[in-house]
Image 1 (cartoon, rainbow, N blue to C red):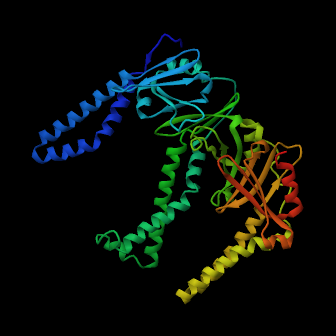
Image 2: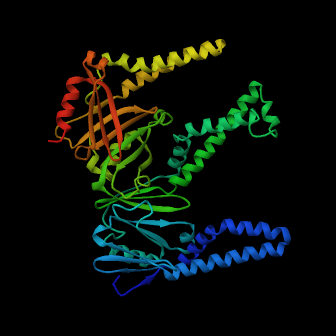
Image 3: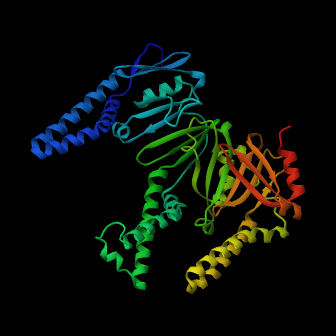
Length: 459
């Protein structure tokens, strides 16, 4: 790529722009179709053809007005029909070049490039919506981000793992109450009088059948969401970068500099823990608004394979994961007390309203005790003097979360003590990385908390 441009995008960009233009005029076009349809079908057809022609003209005009040029110092991008905008991005400011392939690009066999700088948004400072494979490769090379290198490791999410990810997705626990609320609204006649059949579901067999249908609906929604989000998921280590590819309808490849990775979360959700499965999430900052797209390091992995995976893909954070420091045995009852008190309070209110529901109080109390014991068993940390990492594990929102963080990338370090903890000579240790991601271990020995503060505090 030389500086004797300007160059235009692939003609597929005109189609993409036409579809965008059709979306922009969708509302007035719909009004015109409705208005024209009341007179005659010919008028409605005329309005539809007029809208399509207008959208195509807009797309061609935008495509013709969009050009780019690469010099030895910067990328020059020009777009706009009536008031052209000129964007100049210095080459040294380019942080990454992401690959985007939506339905239009995939039909034409082209790809889109999003040029990212540290202060840009998720969609990039410069969006080149359609380039041929050769032009995209040449442009990436000219920008200093070639799409090749010495790949150290590559991992793909296979179909079986994708199905397991959908079946055990954490979103399933969110979808079930939502679908149940919809059924409740129907049964209470909140959505109209046409659901008489639903209102008469009262027998045990019918309730069980409805519950199974709701469970199936929730699973299907979770399954479809996982397919769309994680279909074709692939991660590759290329020199000092991670390239993460994902998506069904829109294939996106995000480039993450390893130097900007603050840590990794190992999440064991309630549905996956019994099967020994975990999700790996990246903690990363300064990606110009693309942290969400780069958050998932791998959607589903066996817990026993985490160490080998990290050693292959991101060895900077690999190493022993066994916890060395744990809350003392005398802290066990403190983990149990808070959820047990909350369960007893809820039970008291429930029994006051519905005395026949007293057996539920026993279930809530037992669940609170088990929850507290599980939180106690999960808590702990690993802090070795020769290790460049710090590892904390605790339970958050029902999931066991292990945070592996780089010491030099810690955003915040905290040691707190409540009056009751002071009396028992205990403390809570917490760290924060990335954009406020925080995890804390409660009720550890005070001397341990002081040692953690001494080793991790700056200076």
